[in-house]
Image 1 (cartoon, rainbow, N blue to C red):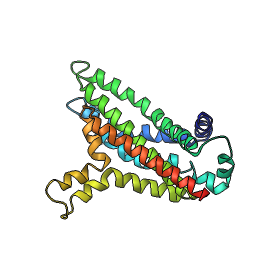
Image 2: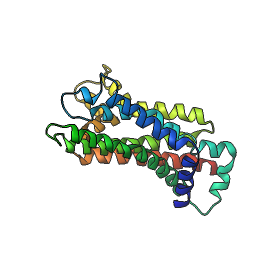
Image 3: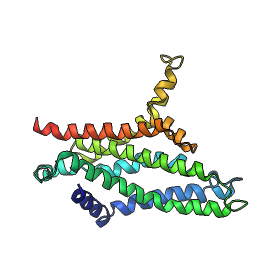
Image 4: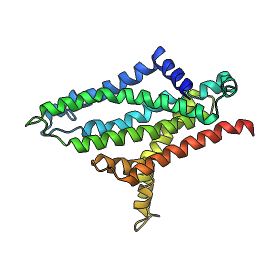
Length: 243
């Protein structure tokens, strides 16, 4: 697994993929937080990073599928997937190696945003007057959300040998799992407490819950369950070659 992880990380940073993903994420979030008047924290009356945590799930909805689309689609298209599976590695080790490499790239993109926190910390009146607990919870929620998106992207890439189609499928699935259940819950067929139950199936409900700064074990279990489910489906998708 470590061999696959190292190979994927080297691939990201030996080409423009890694730099473009990190650069685009930081550019968009930086513009939203410091330049655009409607969302600039410099024009805000209180210190908050809500702009980042409200926008990041939407940006990741496109950036993470762009990172993961080549994971298996390229291997299948070029025929190297057979060569890869002949190595002394189990399919699940291959999946985890690619998964953690993509997730590490997302983490690299998130780390520089700690400068935003440092800026807010010093701009507060008095200095340090901000909700650090809520910000920490939001970071944890955002990382868990990115982990689910990455699992969805890996799964989509394993289904098809076309990277563009894999990107579109992953983007759609990320959108549906994040916001789709919220829209479904508004249908008139769900009444009473059923609409809340349907909302709880989506990421947005649990992401907003963690972003309040309270780490609920139910939310953490939900995220890890989603990750495990999509990675398990990726394993089934790869093993169908042997059937």
